[in-house]
Image 1 (cartoon, rainbow over the protein chains, first blue to last red):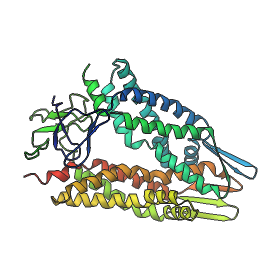
Image 2: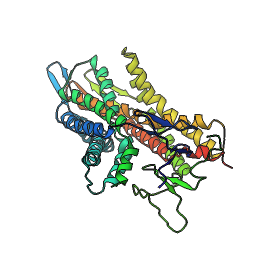
Image 3: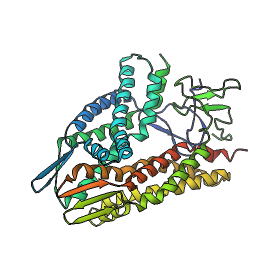
Image 4: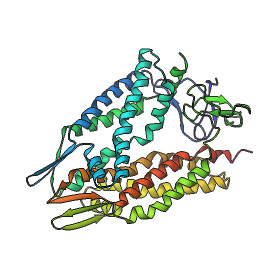
Amino acid sequence: MHATYVACHECDLLHRVRPLPNGGTALCERCGAVLYRRRDGSLDRVVALTLAGLILFCVANAFPLLSMRLDTNIQEATLLTGVLHLWDQGMRELAMLVLLTSVALPGLKLVLLLYVTLPLRLGLRPPGMAPVFRLVRELQPWAMMEVFLLGILVAMVKLADTADILVGPAMYAFAFLILALAGVTACLDPHAVWERLRTP
Amino acid sequence: MSAPARTAAQAGLITCHSCGLLVRRPTSGARHPRCPRCHAPLHGRKPDSLSRTMAWLTAAIMLYAPAMALPIMTTTTLTGVRNDTILSGVYYLMHSGMWPLAAVVFFASVVVPVLKILVLTYLLVTVRRGMTRRRRERTVLFRIIEAVGRWSMVDIYVVTILVALVQLRALAMIEARAGAVFFATVVILTMLAARSFDPRLIWDSQQR
């Protein structure tokens, strides 16, 4: 419609869209916000990283993240153990919040992102791609797996004085999952996806 | 561009909040216009931005005191019972010798929530008054608090993991307490407040 112009989403100033070199980023001349980028081949990378992320997500949830040894007692914890204990302690709202932000929404985001990007890459058009991609963008701030990783580090430090902490297999998967998610965020170009979604 | 800069609003255009497409402002008649590309509802500015931000922010400020004052977790060991608040947790980490980690946690759980509340209050007041100075700085402030807000959740996750691991009935037990619920609610409320605020309102006041 007015694809030759773009308005800054933070200060509303109109800019004429100019061609960028590969890897370039256009900033708003008034407030400095990112207007658009150009990343050739970013869709391939997003599809690959999302697939890798989904596999790592399954591994990270299936195996113990950490275990604690105190004398002869060993306690193992997966991603979901804490949620279950919080629920049992009567902290149901807190359990639901942690479940949503650290497992359910990140998982949903990965699945939905693959639903949009993989068919786009293959040139297919499954139904409802536009609303699904809108949902992916809406979920972005509420999926907080990288914050959870920082939480794990802090918890390990807090327990290190009193007990032996053993790192489980899921911990490695989790760490690589965070890298994959960061890669997806860096490579994903929403404007390019929207452009492709419009032109059949 | 040397000519006076024009905004989308002045040119009679609307940016779709969801996909960023520029659309001509629909003439009266269509009651609920939608974006032709992504089908999201179209608004020139985020709807009721200032009132909504103020509502979320007021709720966050009211819950802030109990969030900091009440214990977020209780540790029961053979030697006794210990209650931890957000602040005592940071204090403990500082004395464990992990300075970089302590600094990150101090920033995420103490500085960020206060900063978000102060900055959003400042932005609300200045936009209401139509202040035209320091618009770029205020936009950058908004960008920062929107980006770092989620990291305040770190203490909630620490409690979750400690609760998961320390369940050795006879020796040691960690349980979550009400302070954690209040603190998590404050974080969510300030995130909602930041998301309802439309930074373009900072720039609207200059237009005559």
